[in-house]
Length: 342
Image (tube, rainbow, N blue to C red; front, top):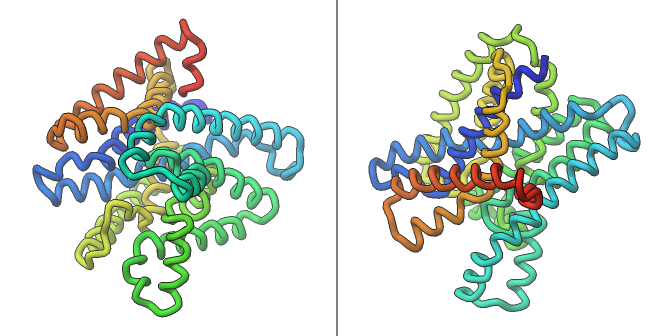
C-alpha cells in the first residue's frame, strides 16, 4: 500500500524544489510585492518542511522501533542513511567551493573566517541553501534517539518545544532583542549559531511528523485531511500577513506556527491519493534533489552576473537546473561516478 504513494510524493517533491528556487530569487518582486510575498513567504515556505517530512516518512518506516536504538539492524539503516547524506553534503560543498572562494576573496579570509566556515559546515550549510543537509543529518539523529528512548507523546513534546524556541528566535528575534536578559541570550546564540533554522530547532519536528504519518497511509482521512489543510493554510496566510503588518518579516522568516499543521495535513492528504509511481515519478524524485542542490549556481549567473530581472532569473533557473539535473541523471548511467551528486 505504501508504494502507491511514492509517485504522489515524488511529484510533490519536484514542485517543492521549484518553490525553493523562488525563495532564493523572489520572482515577482518587480511585478507586485504582495504577489511575491504570498508566493515566496507563504506558498514556497511549505517546500522545505515537506522535504523533511518526506525524509522522515521514508527513513523511519525502515526501522523496527520495538527493537530499540542499539539494534544492529536499526543502527545499520541509520548509518547507511547518514553516510549517504553526508557524502552528498561533502560532494556539493566541494562543488560550491568556487563560489565560496570568491566570497572569501571579496570579504577577506582569516582565522575567524575559518571558524565561521567550520560552524556553517556543522549547522548552517557550507553554502546557504545547503543548510538542509546538515540539518537533516543532525535532526535524524535527534529524532532517532527520541523515538527509541521515549514514548511518542514525549518525543512530540520535545520536538515541539524545540520548534517553538526556534520560532521565538526566527520570528520574534527582532522584538526579543529589546527585552533585558533575553537580548543577551539571543545575541550570544546568534553570535554562535546565527539562525534557528537548523537541525536542532527546525528539522526534528517535521521529521517526527513524517514518522507519525505512517498511521495515515490509507484513504480513510482524505476529506478530513483536505479540510484541515485548507483551514491551516488560511490560518498560515493570516499569520504571515500579521507578521508583515507588524514589520516582523524578513528574508529568513520561515518558522511559522501554522506552517506545522499546514504541511502535516497536506502530507497526509497526499498519502490518501491513489497514484502509482512509475519511471517518470522516479526521475522526478532524482530531479528534485539535483535541482535543490544545483540551482544556486544558475541564480548566481543570471542575477549577480547578468543582472536579469527576478522573474527572468526564476524562469531561466528552472529551465537550466532541470536541464542540468536531467543531464546528470542520463550521464550517470554511462559515468557511474556522477551518482555521488544525487
